[in-house]
Image (cartoon, rainbow, N blue to C red):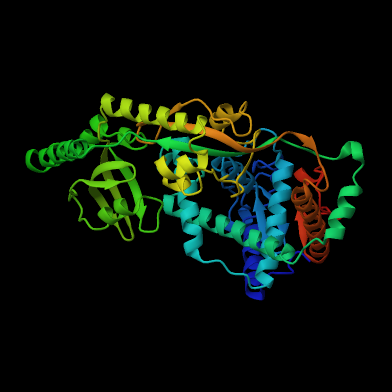
Length: 489
């Protein structure tokens, strides 16, 4: 069973290598614990004098091998895979404080089972889908550890290319596992009768409470940027460009001293590894891929402000660039006019001359919401409802005590360029916290019933596949209480 998925050629090679190690070198099998440290009495033995034809004994040494945590079919889970899983969770903002190694081990075994079955079912995923995710993960690790060299050293790799290759494969495996799981439940549905049965099977005193939910609309007024302010910032950037080109000044120093980009200014404006399909603004990428090494762009505008950009290095389909970002200055007089305009709009609403939605359509500077009467969309669920306990803390504080239809005071926010903008908010609909009601909360109850049915479908699928797949779990994890029968007890 251990060799169930091993090809004949690889099996022969493995046997040959094993014989060389154990017979010629007299080496014992090394047993490691979950940390990858060689356990007691697993030292490599001496090479016998008989092998060399004399009576001397060559020196011996200890070495450390990485721990194998489990084998699922033809896939191996190393102890370092669990460590990488912690990093992956952190990079997506998930707290790892209460997540145990046993729980991560169980998740990895599930992933390998899905991966094994995905291979059987010929599920595919393209490299182009995985590469951006790998780039994001590496950027996170660099920001946490300090530099690419430190990241490479931390993961005991020779080069970043080697680490990237490993991370790429790991990320691709995760995506394949997710697709296999989605395939398992893709046809799972619940009927109205199943929803009803699910709800009324829950004892009344155990039925869930649903948090207070609100639907929020807002009107935003931004101080206008004058053409004179734009011309001034372009002139400043042209002066920097000229100083670098004609006087030999350092572009990196200009970025450190003057750039308003907090993500790159301290690094001399450096953004390494820019790709055509990367997350940067289109105008930024157009400049990056239109210049030769050492060239400096003319000033150009993006949603973030005005830039000049130079190419440090072209590496195939990637470029390393530096940029300086500046914002046009807005005078206090313009800011005061914007604040007065917002006060006037609020007066029109509170007097009843305009509804909030009408005022939003007519006056709001926020393109994303004004055509919908200022209605905000929940970025998590993509509908208009917000759970007060889960929404952005700043927004929650601004609307928490508002009654339905009430207009808030005028708030001053700052956008990503640091510019002041003014807004007012209203609650267009509010549902207070309440115990689950079958009629009122049918959609939410339906979601819970569907989720439960999918979980049962996955459990049934896993049980079937675990029974028919080779599974071997390291002794260090034999005491874990897994959800599935991974230990086959």
